[in-house]
Structures are given as structure tokens and as C-alpha cells.
Length: 466
Picture 1 (cartoon, helix red, strand yellow):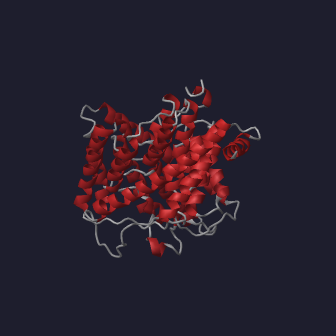
Picture 2 (cartoon, rainbow, N blue to C red; picture 1 turned 90 degrees about the vertical axis):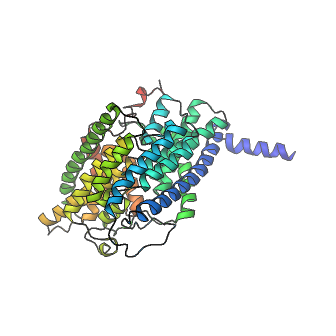
Picture 3 (cartoon, helix red, strand yellow; picture 1 turned 180 degrees about the vertical axis):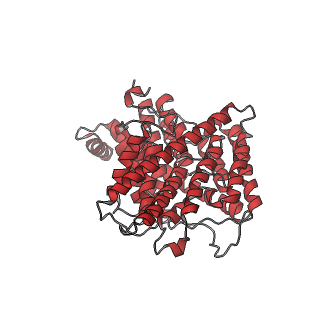
């Protein structure tokens, strides 16, 4: 009698109200995906921290600008002194070659920047991804980023968490459509956790599959559930604070919308430059007749040479974003000052270094460098406008935040996720209006240009829906 009561109770709550038992099962599986993704994101974050400490910090004596929301497992060094620059040239070569060998031997599907592989898997492989990607991608990417390779952590975590969702689908023998949902829920949860932006992560998973205005609306609610759980697990280990700190600047002058139009034009050009340089570099490496496992070593060499002169471009570069957000603010004394020339130098250096790191086949993401590039370009534009129009009361850090969102909307074609993400990662919700304004324009001015090759324009062009 008791078992029958439990069965009828579950049937009522899961299957009642027009919601089928099948739909309820997917929700339960997405919750499990959220747990797996949160643990995977936590483990990957720890690997990144360990790799960065023992490679860039201990060997190269390079300590990046502190990030308000990053919690390291190692004690903070107050006055590290000058970095050992010749070691910074060698480290990215070492990280690129070692990671490419690991991928070649154990999981060839784990190569590249990760997010594009997830998009391809959704459209062409029914969401099916190898479980070997999970450990290999985590170790290989931590080696690349921790040794100074210019790449982001979001690409690896999307593939790692997406593979968690795919693995769970295969274990429960779900249909292809359900496995796609679990894979997207996983990648959404991974992004939401590692950036402490659960809502943006869920929207990112629904938008990233298409370069046009379509979204994968069937995965939104499931991704919200998975992203919430993953975020809670990740923050349990690493804290609940926002990723970045910045003053609570707001929007209080309609005249500034004209300046934000100019910002949108500048950011759109910068985004197209990023896409163009990366695509051309990637094509050149693909045509180059040499072993694939050696190409990341050459890409690491170019990155190291740039890092010799501009050390700020090495690694993920999230400290640079922190510095750009507090330019010309009381917090600048805590995180360090940046000049107009420094910001522009980092912008161009980051684009080139990322193109050689990831374009050569090294394991790392493109989304993170887009955040860095957008913030530095936005802050530089804000400083310039502050010089020209000192009477308006311009805060360059506000332009850094809005420029970061606009750059994302233009390069990865996810305007909704970009708007929400910059608010979540900074804790500033007062700049939503100019952020929407700029993201709408940069998305339109992008004219379909995208950093991800596997995106399709609309749902009806995807093999998943034909």
C-alpha cells in the first residue's frame, strides 16, 4: 500500500497538470546534470589555480591583477617584484605542447576551444560527446591557461559540463532530442557556475547555438534548473560574491546615449577585427604542414613573445577586466591604475595572442578573451571621452562594462546572455539601459559575423530540427 501511495503521489505531481512523466524525468536528469556540472566546474577551477600557481607564479614570478571574486588556494603575495620575462616566453610553449600531446593520446575530441565542439555536437551528433573529454579537457586546458596561454576558461567548461550531460543521457539511454537537452543544460550550468552568473549561463546555452535571432527555447527552463544547482555548488566552495568589483555607477544623463552609440561603433569594429584575425590565424595553422601536436608550441611561442613585452595578456586575463572596471575610481588604488595607452596595448595584444594560442589548436576558450578585449576597448574609449567631454561626468569603468557586453554580443552572437552576464559578474545592475542599447546595436552591426564556425543561422537550418 505504501509503495502504491508513493507511486500515485509521484504520478500526480510529475504527470499532473499536463506535464508528462517523460518531461518530469528530464527535469530530474537536468538537476543531476547541474550537480555534476557544479562539481566539474569546481574541480576545473581548482586545477586552473594550481597550474597558474606552480607555472606562471612560482616559475615566472608573474602575479596578475587580483580579482575581487577569485579565491585562491594559495596565500597572496604582497610584493612579488618583477616577472622573469624569459621564462614567460618558454612557459606557453611548454603548456601548449604538453596539452596537445595529452589530447592526441587520450581524447582527440577535446582539442580546440570547446564551445564550438558543443555547438557542432548539438546540430550534427545528436548531443553525443565522449566521456573522456571530461578529465582530458580539464587537465589540458589548465596546462594551457596556467602556463600563460591566452585563452578563457568558459570554452573548456562548456565542453566538460556538456560532456557530463551527454554522459548522463547515454547512461539512461534517452532519445537523441533528450540528450541534446541534457548536453545544453550541462554547458549552461558550467558557464553559470564558473562565472557566477546562473541566469546568463542558462540564456547562453539557448542562444549560442545560432548566429541569428533564433534561440533553442526547449532548453531554457531545464538550463535554468541545472545552472542554479551548479552555481550553488560552485559558490559553496569558492564564495558567493560577484566575480568582479566595481562602483555602483548608474545611467543618469540621456545625452550619454550619443556617446554609447559611438562606443557601439568602436566595439563592433573591434569585434570584427578579433573574428578576422582569429579566423585567418586558424586557417593558416590548418594549412601548415606540420604535426598537429607541435602547432600549439609555435602558437605558445608567439604568445610568449607578446607576453614578454605585455605580461597582462598572458593567461585568462580576468585581472585585466577588474582593472578596467575600476579605472578612474576610488578602487583603482586597490587594483592598480591603467592608462589609455596600456589599455589599447592589451586590447591588440590579447587579440593576437588569443588567435595564436587557440587558433593553433591549444585547448582554451574564446569567450573569456572577448570579455577582456571588450572591457579594455570600452575603458580606453571612456578615458578618451572623459578627456574630450570633462563636463559630462563620464566614468570610464562604466564604458568598460558596457563595452564588454557589446563585444560579446558582436562576437559570440548572444546579446541577451551578454546583457545579463555583465550585470551578474559585476554586481552592477544600474547600467542595464546603456548595456541593452549597445548590445542591440553591436549585434545588428555584427551582420552575422561570429567567432564560432558551427553556429547555424536559424533553427530550420539545423539538422537537429529538419
